[in-house]
Image (cartoon, rainbow, N blue to C red):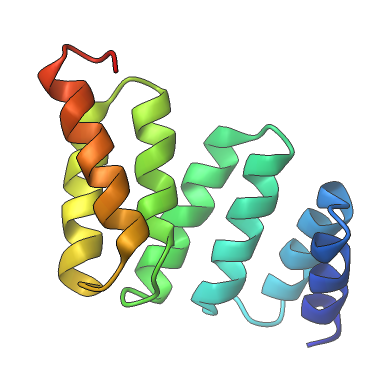
Length: 121
């Protein structure tokens, strides 16, 4: 819990490297906590580590399948890499798990528009 609090402290101050290391340390004690995996992925994304972020989003989805956000964020990573089909699949799954997610709905609309226009908006 201490490392999770420290990570949150650093994240609020946008000290992403410190947040990332604290979230990772927190997972040493709470490895099945999907929210911590989600926060770690966000910090990894903000420190320019999209591959690690994708892995951590995947672990967040696996450990907390109903948690809102990891699928949407992972979808954005896939869309940014040009894999719009996977992005769309993840966003559809997000809406099945969390039907009220406006973020997922908006992102799905953007991804579908990009797919219709051959990958460009």
